[in-house]
Length: 284
Ligand code: A2P
Image (cartoon, rainbow, N blue to C red; front, side, top):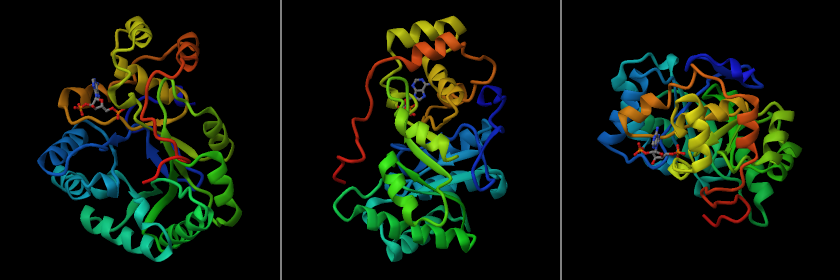
């Protein structure tokens, strides 16, 4: 199905019927201030309709300003933000959500994600309490879809024991050499849209010889190859850039289709670099 994506306006449909524009503009490591404002404005001018930020990125104010200054109608842009780890729990989630929309200067969020699962002894309860707050905000009409980030299968299974609402999205690290096959299969089986963070391996993959060779078959860059590869694996890529030329380049992924042979070759690559962050091991 996702081989048929033809433009940035094409969408992934969530299990609650929301449409998410198929390439999101990532802002992890984009610094607060004019850099973020200009990058977001430029992305919207270039046709992106989906912007991904997070409390911990500390750029929500500038992301919100970039969206406002672009002049686009609020309803035309899909905005995601995420709850930071130190703010988990029922009451503190409600408070943190209020802080995020105040910084973004918006009335509602399209997608709100739990940034990382709590992974200590009482993690299951903390995740369940946090999710109850997400469900309340969703029912109150403050969020159009609620979801997770960096949740592995066992975290999602535990959450589903008490959840009323099935998560719409799980945003995970996903790039050539790091497909997280178990989590991907579980999410697909539960109709949870998988979003790909660091689709370019935070830039680490761009000089990989095998990826360069395959990109050469199509006359495209390795960045475009990685982004298209995500789409053809039915995951939603979130490439980050603050560089106008790259922002445009990363959106030009609709006039070629990777062959099954090349998809298989990339799917079979061993680990060739990534963040090294594991949801069960992180201590932040
Ligand atoms: P910059 O923001 O300075 O343009 P990921 O999305 O996997 O996290 O990767 C983001 C990194 O890759 C950033 O360092 C970004 O640099 C760089 N990048 C993004 N798009 C491209 C591109 N088309 N070509 C080369 N580097 C890119």
